[in-house]
Amino acid sequence: MRRLQDFFGDWRLAREITHGDGSAARFEGRAQWRAEDGGALYVETGELIIGTGRFAAERRYRWGADLSVWFDDGRFFHHVPPGGGAAAHWCDPDQYDAEYDFSRWPEWTARWRVRGPRKDYEMLSHYRR
Image (cartoon, rainbow, N blue to C red; front, top):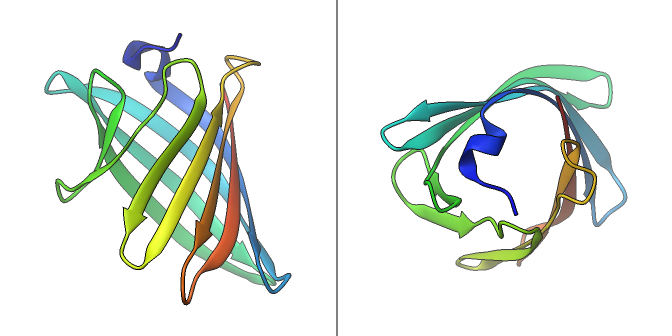
């Protein structure tokens, strides 16, 4: 069972993004969890690679002590299951379904499948110390 403190520190992050039309992209960078206000600030930084293009990218989330995840603007996103497993988020009109796998801790993955009228992709994120 994972606790918030298990995530603290720096991680290498590699993400594969596969769209329903077969196109693909990837993200290479790092993720960092820092203790903040009884929870954590999650910051990922790196490069989004689409074809031959490389773009700087950054994302921030707030994590609660109970592994709840919030967008940086304060909206609730989802809850990470402490033992791994499924999570979901409805963002009208799109459905986000996740699967967390902690079985090879401290290496782990998060797979997101996103479906909606204009969205159809899967993201597989690999985290390593």
